[in-house]
Image (spheres, rainbow, N blue to C red):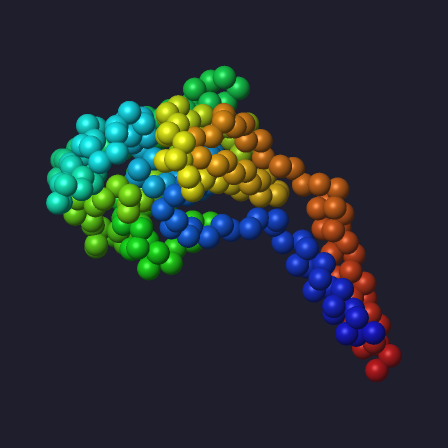
Length: 260
């Protein structure tokens, strides 16, 4: 009887935990992740991680293979006739803000038709293998604050190849409340068919009682409206059930003590 009671209490207590699965930030070179969270101030925050190559989709779509890429903050390397495209680290450090604007140029955020300009975007540039070694979990609060900046600045890449480089960026949608429907649009150009292979976008909204997840294949995605998921009937029922089981359990314990 005691084991059965303990088992019921433990099971229902676990069910009462928030239905939020924290997503691992596995630094896959062809995966873009967009995490929609509630900020410390109570409005909406986004943390995005994406391959740097995706930021240059507009220019890459009209650039033939093995030819120089004419784009902001890019330097082309030619080694034995093989041309690769690299981020110009010196230019980035000279104008950190301008590169941040460039990274967000293809993203549009709105609520009920009202365009929202992101507040205080902060970003870091990191080579994929460095982020992999850091073993970071975005769901546990990877931010563009001092901790993340110090982590990445220690091994700041020098003119990294855009194919081996990731961007992690944090921004706030000021005044957008946790229950507001957020529309995310991507305005970039689709890469030619073969170049899209393997690219994927994963969007996760943590603001509701249940995690909402959506994914798209290719380097672009359709406009998406994120509406936080309310607790379902089961979610409401099991919270009350936990309370009932705990009360019954305490009653049994007190009853056994009175008999002993």
